[in-house]
Image 1 (spheres, rainbow, N blue to C red):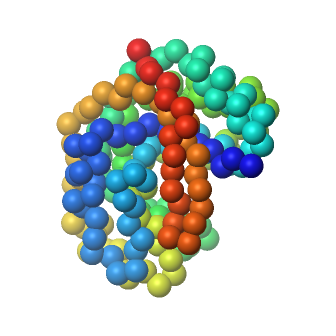
Image 2 (cartoon, one colour):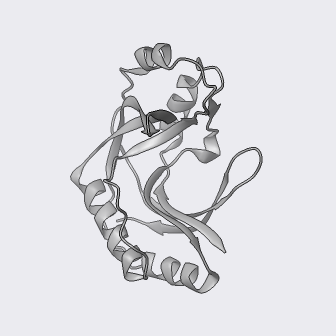
Length: 177
C-alpha cells in the first residue's frame, strides 16, 4: 500500500521564514524543512495499480503557476483539542482553481471527494495533549507575512509513518505553466 498526497512545495526563502518562526511551545513537534508543504489533496492509502493511475492522471493537469504568500498563523482542532499549528497561505485564484483540478483528477481515479473545505496552509507543528500554551506563539506569529512567490510544480508525495514522525518522498513532479 502507498500513502499518498498531492502538494506544492514552498520555495526555500518561505521555508526558512517558517523554520525561523518555530519554537516557544513546549511539547510541540515542529516540522522540519523536508516536511513543509501545502497539501492540495490528501489521498491516503492506495494499492500500487491505483497509485500508478493517480500518478498518470496528475500528469494531465495543465495549469498556470499559482502565487502564494504567507499570511498569519492558526490552529486545527478536533473536538476541542488543538492538534496542529499552521501558517496561513494567501492564495490567488490560480491556486484555488488548481486545487479544484487536482480534486477532479483524483476523484476521477475512483477516490471519494474530499469532504473538508480547502484551507491553504502549511502545517508547522503537531501538538499532543501535553503541549504547552499556544497563546505566546500565536501572539508573536500573528503578523506572519511574506511577499508573493510563484510556484512552478505540483508534486505527488508518498508518506512513510515512523516513530519519529512522517517522512515524505516526492515520487512525481508535474511542471506548471
